[in-house]
Amino acid sequence: MPRTTTDTATGPSPAPVGRRERKKAATRRAIADAALRLFLERGYDEVGIREIADAADVSTTTLFKHFPVKEALVFDEDADQETHLLAAVRERPEGRSIPAALREHALTARLVSADGDARFTAFADLVTGTPALRDYAQKMWLRHTTALARVIAEESGLPADDPACTALAHFALEAPRAAYPHDTPREVVDRAFDLLERGWGALARSEA
Image (cartoon, rainbow, N blue to C red):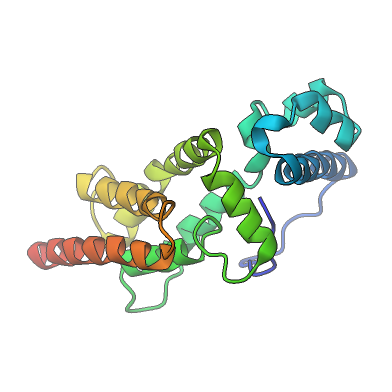
């Protein structure tokens, strides 16, 4: 996935990374960058694993140690995505509702917001135009439902297994997919979150 410079670090500085970890990270980055370049040049279905490994100067065995399936080559920041997702709820400004925080996150998520970034636009077109990548991206994104529901419950003072928290988490993560076939993705996401905001607000009023 194209990397941006908008993410900011919070909390204490991370511990220094050892040489072996740096080498592994550099290898992973080289493989992902080579794969994305080839996919953008020729199309996802037209590029083989062997070609990607050769372009990154690694063996196919090494490639599969970092990326178990071909689709994963396009989405190499899954852990970071969950961290930012949960932080959007935990670190939202005072007075901002949870749906509003998730709306803002969705509108700045990399599969929804291009805003003139040619490299991002090409990446988004690759994903939305390739069924295998589109389906993989959504399945991967929905894996965060449990973690997000837990944080929503914590922030709302509700039981960890409250079905309303799970529902909000699920539909908030589903919302960006509705934007894929539309020319105005921001409007689509806004409409979806308008619905979630009203429903969550009604629940909060009934619980008060």
